[in-house]
Amino acid sequence: MWRSVAVALVLALVSLSAGQRSVETIDLAGSRYFISQTSPYVPTLNWFLAYQYCRTIGMELLTIATAEEAEVISSYLAENRLTDTDYWTGGNQLGSHLWMWMATGQRFNSSFDNWAPEQAFV
Image (cartoon, rainbow, N blue to C red; front, side, top):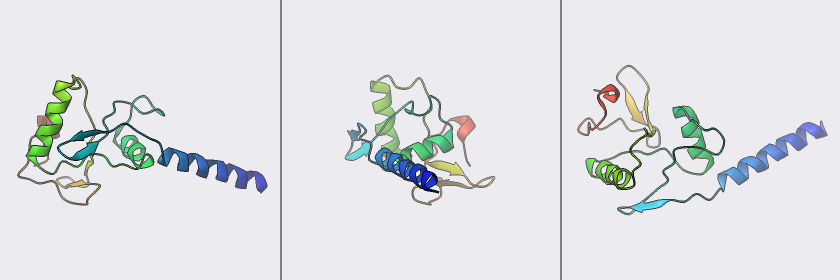
C-alpha cells in the first residue's frame, strides 16, 4: 500500500513540476505565444498529445480569433523561417461539420476561412 502511495506522490510531483515548467514565449501584437515543433517527451505529437502537452505547461493550443491574428502569426513564422512544418491549433472537429475551438468552446468563425484546402471545414 505504501509503495502505491509513494508512486502516486511521485507522479503528482512530476505532474506539478511539469505544470510549472518555464517555456520561452514570444510577444506578438500584445499576446504571448509559445511556438514549438517538438515536445521534450515525444518527438512527434499528434493533435491529442500536443493538446495535452500544452495543458501540462499551463497553456492552450492556439485559438485564431481573427484574420489579423492569423496574419501576425503567419508573418512571424515566415520571417523566422518556421514555415516548413505544420502546427496544431486548438480547433477540433466534433462532428461531420462541427469545428470548435477547445479553449473557448466557440464554433469556428465561418467568416475566417484562411485554411489549407484539405483543412477546410465549411
